[in-house]
Amino acid sequence: MASIDGASGDYPVRYAVDYTEGRDRVSVLFRVLLIIPAFVLASGLSVVGAPVALMLLFRHKYPGWWFEWNRELSRFNARLGAYALLLRDEYPSTDEEQSVHLAIDAPVAAQLNRWLPLVKWLLAFPHYLVLAVLWFAVLVTTAVAWLAILITGKYPRGLFDFSVGVAQWTNRVMGYAFLLVTDRYPPFSLK
Image 1 (tube, rainbow, N blue to C red):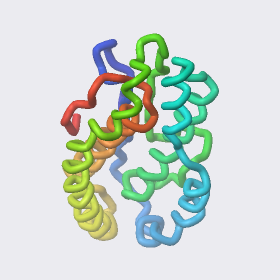
Image 2: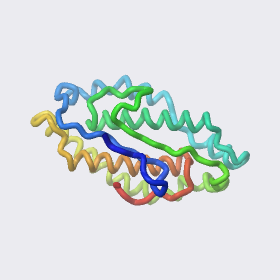
Image 3: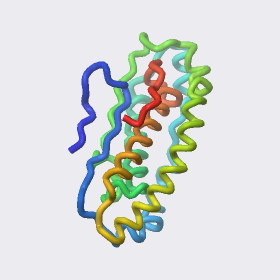
Image 4: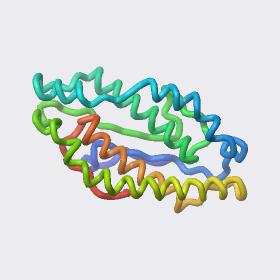
């Protein structure tokens, strides 16, 4: 089991996926079709940063219920992403953690700059550029992994770690720029 609970110096958004040796070849073969219902559900829900930005700006508050909603929706999207990238074979649950772990520390509004939400999305622009290139590479490696799983029944560990690293990086940027749970700039790292 991958651990995401670390020392207090860790970034407030942490992501990990448990690696398994044996894979379900039939599920992997038809994954594009199997994911459609979960994708439709996720598309109907959205994480909107604008209301949180306005609450921080005018009230200097981040309501707990809104954080819980965003965290649980982000966790569902993380499970959906792991399923889509062939990292896991379990169909994404809407409420159970399964083997995809996303920890997001609750924000303390008093520690958040009330004006920074207006520009965080812009400050994260260098991350968007790097992540665009990395996500293209993830799509290529996922196609290679798809073939490898169909032939050998295993997801090559290096490709798995690369995909998880890019998803980890993406989740840190989402936590900073859109969920607005931290003012700490996300590191440029796959770790």
